[in-house]
Length: 159
Figure 1 (cartoon, rainbow, N blue to C red):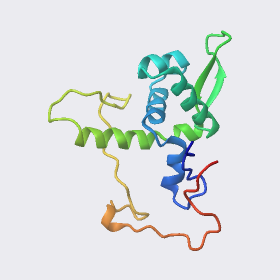
Figure 2 (cartoon, one colour):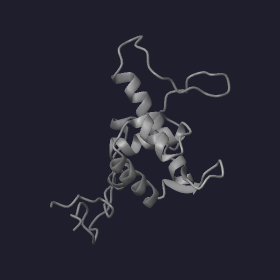
Figure 3 (cartoon, rainbow, N blue to C red):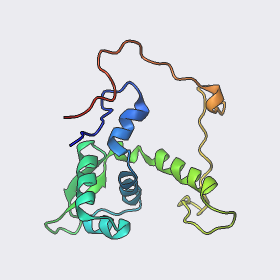
Figure 4 (cartoon, rainbow, N blue to C red):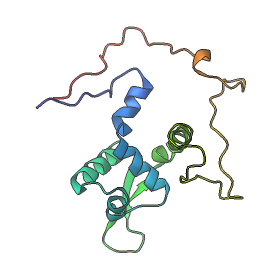
């Protein structure tokens, strides 16, 4: 069996992040957690995914500190999944994906869900990367500075 490529030692923050949340199911679980879902059955019903895949993705998100298990809010013996501060910090990622999807995967005037501010019910402003001085920057205004001669190699195979 071929091992999964891991980026846990990569010098690139994007690669390391994808190691934790780099599949569509995991991001959809996080999206649903932001929408208030907490129980295994709620995630399963919302996403329609196989229970074994959901269980594996939830374990991974807990292992990476994005979700945590907490006692059920109704006092039952069940456990629920709650976003940790690390998980809540994914909010701009979810908003960015949502806005990108709205821009590129819907026809003009095609109906889709909307994320709105609870104070007034208005859509959020567009996310815009900014330089330290406040200027809006794009890909042509930035460059990645690589870390030279790292002792560990990124992209090793897990055994």
